[in-house]
Length: 234
Image (tube, rainbow, N blue to C red):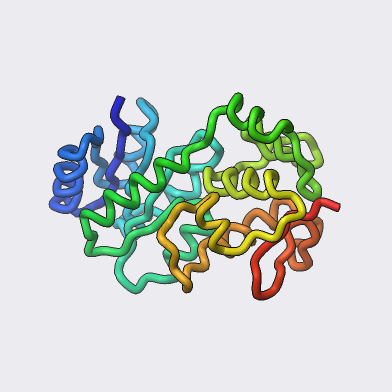
């Protein structure tokens, strides 16, 4: 069954061009012109991935993105205006899986979509077989790999994006090992290496806010200056 891509953009010509291009490459595509139409479609079915325009009239894409949380939420690639760095950073902090600047290069878009889809959550039996464990202590939380959940001190589930899940999974499998940015990109992010890419740092900062007692002085996922990060639960 082909992957379902939902294209949400207020520019009709762009929506139709993307739908036609992706359709010819084997994807099942649907379209939405705004946040209201997108939510109406989400009520009926769940796409595998959403191409989400940030700067839409009315309710913008960042507001929509805020409501797309949890391991079962669709993957999201933001479409941003060229040079809108703030929107990209905020979007990544809020859980977007990737971004692409307009005007969109169609071949790059298809490549990014395939890369993001490859990062989808692995099945629980495979995870258990690979790690031998399914629960890991992350500061004031427990990470349940089998259930794909992060559990807080009060026993309630904390929302996780697919990227946050992949990062926690990667750290859980590499306890006590320093991971550099190359290893993290390869193991969890799966994007072409860019020495100026700060999205990993943004995601780790977001995770720290959930797991650390004092996120400004992290003790669980620590920075090793000049090298990378280490998961050290103590």
